[in-house]
Picture 1 (cartoon, rainbow, N blue to C red):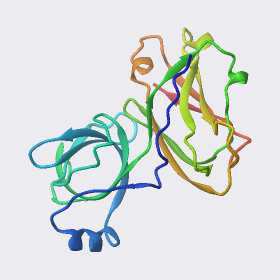
Picture 2 (picture 1 turned 120 degrees about the vertical axis):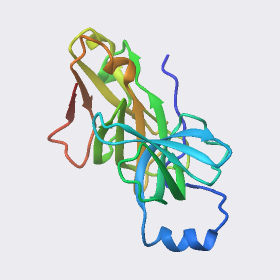
Picture 3 (picture 1 turned 180 degrees about the vertical axis):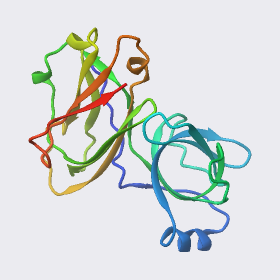
Length: 221
């Protein structure tokens, strides 16, 4: 049985603590960037994150001076709004000023022996789908409900032995009726599949209202 994931949509801002709130608020509106990163936990200085660029780019460790909400677990993927506090371009370790840290759907690739036609795949509006290291990341819009939903990436068990593995975005409103559209972010770890010697391509199928004529996206190893 597939385990359901119920994480708040990325529009909810997680509270942060900071020593200089006025400076952070000012810069938050003038100089910042958004990235999906991995929360690595706290050290004596503050929260640490790992940033991965597109494809197979080397990782960058991000050191902050804030503490994130305790509901965010170590190794969870988050949407981070921040700016670099130093000018060490190209360094593998960077100090950052954090302006916001949002919880997103964070999960590992799952497998199902069921037919893909039986999976709940409520439509989305795609904004972007990209790979960073061992993660497939999604920015889309979904219909808002005030209840938890299920969103996960599921591999078709019948294709696991193939060089191309078919994966489907499962999106289930759990019987709720959607209303207006709002932004949503998700990140799925696919490292166990990506490391296989026989694996060559991860094919993602979406029920997408924005580009219905495409429907599938390939990520070649």
